[in-house]
Length: 181
Length: 181
DNA sequence: CTTACTGTACCGTCTGGACGGTATTGTCAA
DNA sequence: TTGACAATACCGTCCAGACGGTACAGTAAG
Image 1 (cartoon, protein in one colour):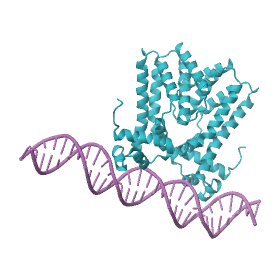
Image 2 (tube, rainbow over the protein chains, first blue to last red; image 1 turned 135 degrees about the horizontal axis):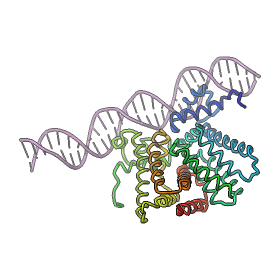
Image 3 (cartoon, chains in turn cyan, yellow, green, red; image 1 turned 45 degrees about the vertical axis):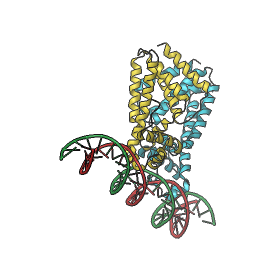
Image 4 (tube, rainbow over the protein chains, first blue to last red; image 1 turned 135 degrees about the vertical axis):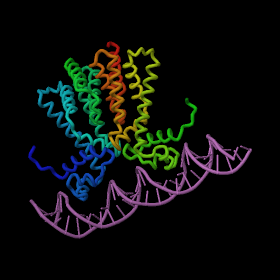
């Protein structure tokens, strides 16, 4: 899983994300992506015949990796499908602490056309429904969900306005509440 | 205050916001803005000598109008500087229910260059500090702040994934918690 | 023979911005 | 009062460059 020279497709995707982070979400050009990925422009267009397809893939990739991480987190603990809310909270908390430019690709997609975020909307609604079916107190769930959404948006916009202790206070509060449900 | 034909500057700003909402945050062009504002391109560039200035103004405008609304809300109630958290919550709640494309301008600015959001970051940190100085329970404040941030980001991305009752549950929970502080 | 590209040349369109002009209004000395 | 000038608030055109995408010939590996 670690030793594995990346396919052109992967190289292009990560190059695109990184580049979006550098040049700004709305200034992502195919030429630049190809260059950064170490691929000719023809090669890029072979993998992604249009810019829209590339941006779609960027979003899909983002969603996929989050889903995988969530699954892994749930598996790591004894997850009896009961406390997957805590898994969600803790995973999100951890993600908010490290930097991960893969989200920049999502912003690039948004910049081109907000409709590219539709899969994200569906994914989140689905996640919320699953969480809802596993908890008793919906109000508390909503609060937890929205807090994380807030944290995530700050990360997305690179707005590090919260001190570590402030963030931790909110998180431990959430975890405590989640335990009593 | 209501009867008042708008200056070119205002026309341009609202045209830009509306247009950003239509064509997508990253596809805002000066030509299109000028046309929609009923102004020649030369006229636009007279008011905003560069695209960057226009985007800056868009962000400033957004912040200013929110600040004004917050002040008005605080004044409306007897606000003895104590419960300005509730004012903040209620104002944000109300804003999340109506559609207000002025935020699209902020996204356009983000698309061009994330640094344009620096004033937003400063504003929010300042707001949080003020709130902090007026409440006793910091953990609860953080939760409230982040929930609203989450709500706001959903609005920004036009992701209406929450049902009205779900949103209301979170909001009434917040208001109840804010009362006991 | 197919897959997965490379490399280069090119096209049509759009973009930010520079620039030169113009109509209106204001200022002020003679 | 008038004539000279200047500042304000635009208009309309033009341009060099960047962009997404096409086309196509070549090639190395399996």
